[in-house]
Image (tube, rainbow, N blue to C red):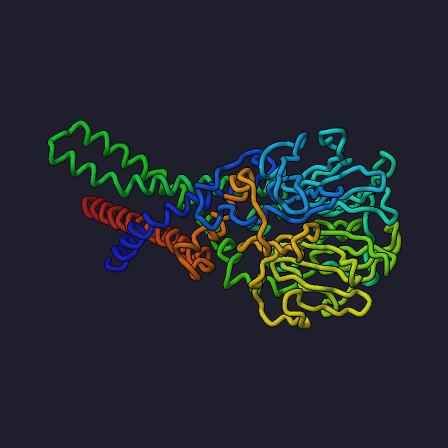
Length: 516
């Protein structure tokens, strides 16, 4: 009995606290599972902690720039497209024709062909500039996000890179290509990605996502009914002191109804709810680190081993081939994507964060590539395989297992006449003093990104400090114990009722035998 009371106390009090966070996890998880559905929804950054407010071009509002005239620089990034001068003093909105909302105006890259036509790629669409507006160009049979856009070898046309395929845009015609598999290549994935797909339900397609959504709804019901069950006894006692018997009976019926469905849903879905809680806690430190390090064979479409792995593409004049950044590293591909590509050894390539490459620019002065991500910024000589840190000029040495470094590079520009190239850090902002217009400072945040920050617990860092990295793990552990405690309590209650019923039946049977 003492154990049962202890479980009850734990389930009652800890469950009340964790139910608030469970509601946040569930609602944000449903939004994350259906990005296309919510991509047009924005929220004001004032609802988020101060580190999410835009100051000094931080938070990824600038990814890069293109010099498109004598004194015209086109800046692009998470805040859309902006036209300014080489001193960055006058800023003008350049988004006419692009679908509104922060998610739709997250620009991946901008290029200018030899004939002067501008092209830009957002996360979802390709646009070309016609007059004073952007015109949307539909990519055939493309249902995934766009990763990059770049110029062809002769700069007369463009190449569009989705997360899985290559699109050649030549004279108005669009040709879809698939990069072949390297010789002897065996597709692999991390255990982390597999667990993530299980957590979101993506592993089983749309049906799996809907099942996970249904589990989230169950957890929402458990949280709401649990809060009601906690609060109603206090209200009943208050009504009793006031002698309001009719109101007491009404509250009593509500108590019985909530308890009934709370127990039914919690008991019958315990395996599914624990599955969501445990897989979720594995996706953040400390459990995510061994999962990221563990590689396993991947089941992919036999016609495309690069499904959901492509991230960026550039033409390299010195090597006379394409350089493609993937989630597996860098590779060299021939001009027409016919021959098997050549993978570049990881010790001869820059370190790129799992969050993806953010800077991929050619330094014309040194003939080196400047490659940046949340793992830092590097200068890379492909021919020699030499990689040096952009800031310290020292050889790159990966000494930490953390997916981010102290320099979380989100953008780079060498088109301003401020003396030095500008490096944009996701947290600190621009490395050089640059006037920021109020429109960018007031840029909204997509609902999907807000849900992501809530779901992974990063938004709690101003309050929890370094412990915020463990927030999801600790929350998942507590939620799992809360679900288990409820199951144990209900299981023991049912066993006691069954034992009592068996005793009553035995007594009745003995009594009947005695009378006979």
